[in-house]
Length: 449
Image 1: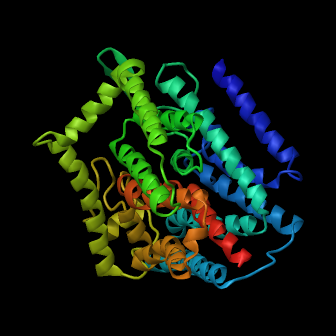
Image 2 (image 1 turned 135 degrees about the vertical axis):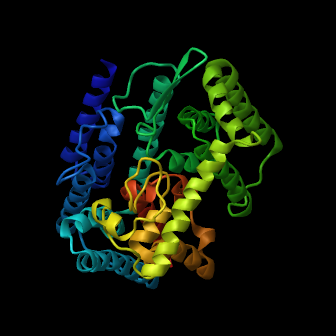
């Protein structure tokens, strides 16, 4: 019953966004993520089709395009240009053109339009980057701040609900769990699909806030509790990196001088919260997570060694094949029904069909194989060009916590989470959104200059 009540609230919120589009047009940008997450997990995972002609992410891309048209025809065009924005647009353009070229290349090479197009439409979702960028660049700074504030609020609410559902066993989310285990009589749910989509971004923003007051520390503890309850070692590492990096950014970039009593109080709150979470509130869940971590540390843990080797074999097999076939544009876009004839020796996981290029558990192998080193280089340039520009222009001293939060989150998404999941292929809209937030916040001090 609670699930349906919350679903109705989300639907009403969606209607509110649409009705108040004239007053708060920036909130329209939340719609693609409401749809992409099945209304934040309050609809079953199978509600939208994952097979067939039109899939869920296709719907999200269409919605993003409609939003782009809405802003294009209802608001003033971009009123300024600068070297940074122009250069970044060129990189995006070349990247999208390479994706389109790879479709034509794949059709000519393999002679199967349908098979190539099905993979092409996955990567073409990166076309959401220029759409999001246009919308951001014509939107007032205060409206973008309002959008970020809504993302904070929604994420914190979802994080609290996640704790209630998967920590206390109160059924809230309808989206199916990835895995269920019984650990010493306690039912353990591992649910990635209900995990708040912007959690790490909001965690970084909270940690980098100007004032780390008691309430923000409580929010940080709740967000970290979500990481505990998803029982994934890599996400724990990401959380720790964000915590440590945020602390260093506050010291060396923000020049924050910590007063010992406040630092001691902050650490005391977090340590007390960690104690409560691990020993009082969620002792069984913590023991389960600890048992998973101990599997890695255990001498001779063959399963975990194979987990790492599995991902390395996925990457190395596809890198080697890409070097042999076409280093620039890769193997192109093709599904296993055709690729099995051409690449039967590709390394695959147990249960995958022979010749499968895009396999689970890892992003970079399939990404390089599909777009080549040319595509991988352009993708990395989308992240590193803004960083290099900041270094040369010395503008990094003028950027606020939102930029550093999204840059830190994006780094973890690309280089850490991308190694153990298919996020570079399955979470394209979130990554595109992060790219654009990063670029937008660099453009603010440029406009002032």
